[in-house]
Image (cartoon, rainbow, N blue to C red; front, top):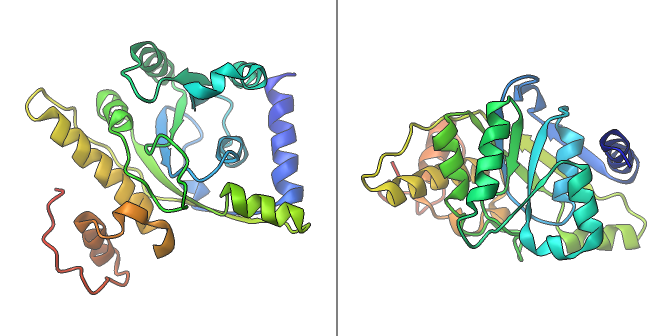
Length: 237
């Protein structure tokens, strides 16, 4: 089965079996390399990538645990995705991703590294920020709601079309990281990306970033309502 056919099937599925709203898709570039960073709610998120991104050169990173399944190995190969070890420094996978970005492709990543068990954001890993800083490419924060596995199963079981929402934020770029305080800088970049995602999510989805000082600062800058405990000192810049 070809890439184009799989993508056609995915688009038919989302068009006819879900109600999917996309806000800000016009911000995404039609040419050139960039990175998309999104929260991760369910197994459907990977397929959703090929619905809302109108590109043929998508780099999708898949957790190594799925490599044991013959169907997923075939599907990942068909979609030109990459298996990655989430718990160790996977130099081989990183090298492939960087080489493909240098050719002008686009990377879609979930900084959290795994599906959220509650729907709320979980603490993100710094690997994605390393790629953002290493390549100097713009990263677009994307917020997803409605793709939780339990919610989707319940909707389909009751013959309802689940409502999925996608919000695309403004792109960001980050300077390269030197050897001085490298881990702290990567963590700051990671928090910046995740707080921009959190800003576009309902409060119930913000998880561990709900009380982050940087999120409060972003809310003030955007004119959004600021929680009562927003007097915390901003420490992430």
